Every structure is written in C-alpha cells, then in structure tokens.
Length: 160
Image 1 (tube, rainbow, N blue to C red):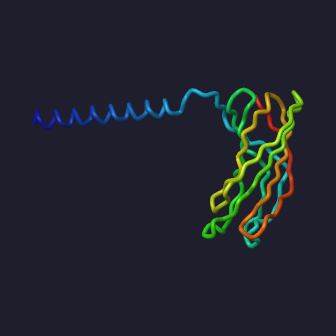
Image 2: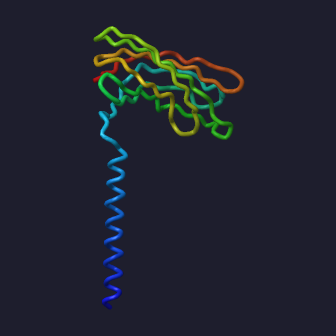
Image 3: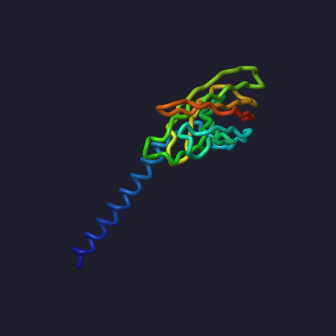
C-alpha cells in the first residue's frame, strides 16, 4: 500500500508542477507590452461585390481597434467572408487613409488579406500619434479574372 501511495503522491506532485510551469510559461509568453483592450469603431457602411460575383457581398461598417503602444494601434476588418473557399476565396487589398485631427498628421496604410469562409479582412498598423483620428476605408477585391473596387466608408477612432 505504501508503495502505491508514494507513486500516487509523486504523480500528483508532478502534474501540479507541470501545470504551474505551463501557466508560468504562458504568462511569460504574453509579455509585458502596452496593449490596450480592443474597441469597435463604427464606420459608415462600405459596399462591394465579390469578384466571384455569386457570393456574399463585401459589406463592413466597423473596425476592430487595439492599442499597440503610445500613439499606435492596429485597425482590423473582420466582417468579410466568401462561400468560394474551395477555389481559394479571393484577395481584398485594403486601403486605410487617416488624418489625426489633434496633431494634423496624415497617412495611408495598405494590407492584403485572403478572404475565405471564415470572416476576416485587412489589418492595418497605424502610427498616428494620440488623438481623434478620422479614417477612410476602401478596398479592391480581386481573383484571377478581375478586380472590383468597393465604396469608401469613414469614421473616427481614438488613439491613446
């Protein structure tokens, strides 16, 4: 009996140590950056048709914004998807023009995203400086045959 109790105790102790080590590693791998909670910034509605024509339309009215440091954010489109996954979906070449209304800085960011069955879209890294920032999103959606532009949509994000 004593032998079985010792094995059980060692096994329990080993599993507990492994769990502590795994959680410590996970905490360390997250890092100590200056990330901020994600917010949703409303936009006017952008419209476009998929280059696959018989598909879900390109339609988004928001950006998912996360702070990455003082005066810097990522702004992501996550509302676009395609039924044409078996053919590789399509590419969405996004453009985000921005104007910081506080410091008058301006810029343009580009990103290309593969659009498939699961929602996604371009993600933009912005270094605008802190303040209210007016953004205008547009995209060109393309497949092997043609490229079709979307309408543009605008909104305001707050960068800290």
